Image (cartoon, rainbow, N blue to C red; front, side):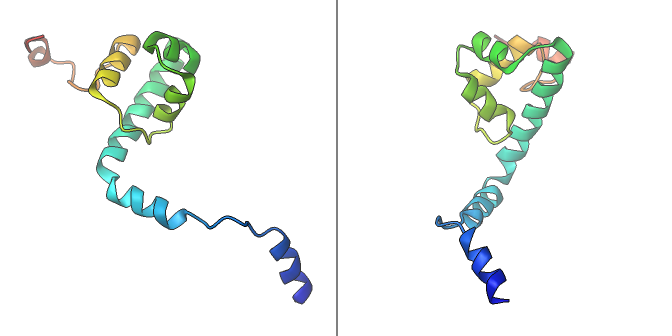
Length: 107
């Protein structure tokens, strides 16, 4: 038994686990994270349909691929400006459903 404990200690991380902080963050921000994950899934589906890569999206949005990666992980608090860019590039509706009412809104 001591030998097993010794081997386990060899693989023990020197850094303190952040799981509790991450769990508290997810609980506290559950509402907007749910929306962010939904948007990420919409984007991924449409990107696959259109044959677009993360780099293609980043280039069109004039942002880094790393930023697009963060959005597509579903944990990014996205601005309205970014949402509008995503809608325009992927031809999807995120902010306003595609209805006649949406077409009558002032621009």
